[in-house]
Figure 1 (cartoon, one colour):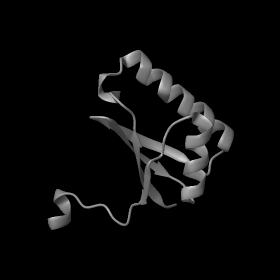
Figure 2 (tube, rainbow, N blue to C red):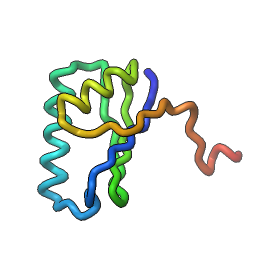
Figure 3 (tube, one colour):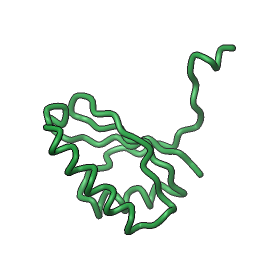
Figure 4 (spheres, rainbow, N blue to C red):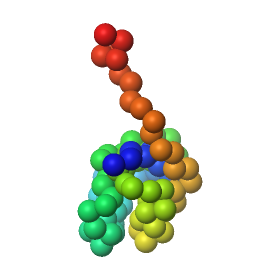
Length: 90
């Protein structure tokens, strides 16, 4: 299944409390359950005023639907072409 990185612009997200981040995660999980098994949230990085999320999904449209239903922005969605890491050099 294709893998995507989603950039979400959320003002001051790095300053959100653990409880607020838990609330956001819970909402995301609720919507994922409604959408079924075609979309999967892998993990997210909170940095500055952005959250960068890694998702598996058959299409960008399904990711946009998740964002709309959850009430989160999906400012940029990019299909991941490949993953490289230190072991790639070997």
